[in-house]
Length: 345
Ligand code: TXA
Ligand code: MG
Image (tube, rainbow, N blue to C red; front, side, top):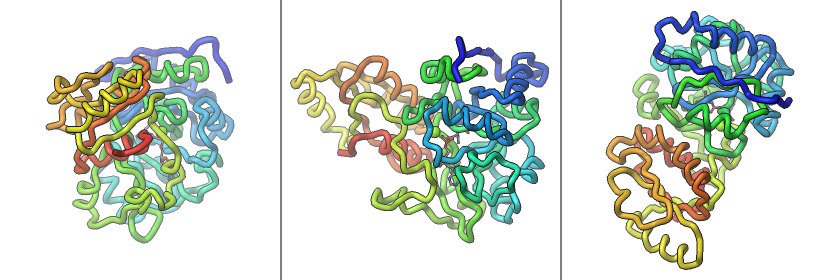
C-alpha cells in the first residue's frame, strides 16, 4: 500500500473527553475499515490494525518490512475481550493481569481461531496486552475490535517514541498516525509466556522481573537473554533490532571511552558518545548525547530510542555508549543496547 500522505491526527492525551475526540473516532473507523494506523502507547508507538482481519494484518508486515515469522501483540481495552482471543486464562495470568493491566506487560496465552492467522505467525499462542495510555485505550474501545500492533518503526530501527519518529520511518506507507506526544516508558512491554507450566520471561521491559516475581513467585528467564548462543523461544528476539546507522559499541569501562573516541577520530571518523546528564561534560566527541539521568534509569529508558535516532540525524559513524547497571529497568535498557550494538567492549 502507498499513500500520497500519511494523515496526522493531533490529540491531547490529557483531554478529559477523549472518547468524544473526532480525531480518535476517525482513526478508529479507519482501523475498522482495514487501514493501518500508528498510535501512542505508554511504551512506544504501535502500528495497529484489526487483529481479526487477515488482509489488514498483512499490510502491517508490508509497511514495516517485518519478517512474517515474527508474531504481533494484540492490544485490548477490556478484560472481557480476552474471551474472543484465548482459550484459557490460567491462575498465574489472572494474577498478572490483576497486578499490571492496564500497563506494559504482554502475556502469551493459548489462542483461539478467531485471530487472523498472520498475527501469530503460525504459533498456537498469542501475546496480549492492555496498554495504559489513554489514547490507546480510547482508540481500541472506539474501534470495537482487538488491535494487533508491533512497534511502529521500520523493521530493525529503534522503536518510535514520538509521532515524528513514526513519520520518519513510515510516511506514505501507512494511512495515518495519532500524534499524542512523546511516550512515557520509552522501551517496549515485558513479554512473559503463561501458556507453559512455568512462566518464562522472553523480553525484559516496562515491568521488571522483580515486580512480576513479587506477585507470582520465581519465574524462568529464556536462556537466550543470558547467552547469545541459545536460540530464543520468542521469534522476535532473534532479529537485530533498534540499530542506529553508525557502528555502536557498548563500553563497560566508561573510563576508556575518551581513548576510543580519540583513536576513531584520528582515523577520520565522525564519533558520538551516548552518556547521561551527569557525565556529558566529560567527553570530547563530535556528538555527545545525554540520555536522561543515571541516578534515575527510567529517564534513560524514556530517551533511549530518541537518543539512538539522534546519532543517525547527526550522521555519527561510530558511537560509544556507556553501559548501564543491569538492575530494574536497566535490564531492559541493556537488552536493547546490546541488541542494537555491533559489540560490547
Ligand atoms: O510495548 C510493546 O510491546 C509495543 C507496543 C506497541 O505495545 N509493541 C511491541 O511489539 O514491542 P513488537 O512487535 O515490536 O514486539 C513483540 C514481541 C516480539 O519479540 C515477538 O516475537 C513477541 O513479542 N511475541 C509476540 N507474540 C508472541 C508469541 N505468541 N510467542 C512468543 N513471542 C511472541
Ligand atoms: Mg519492535
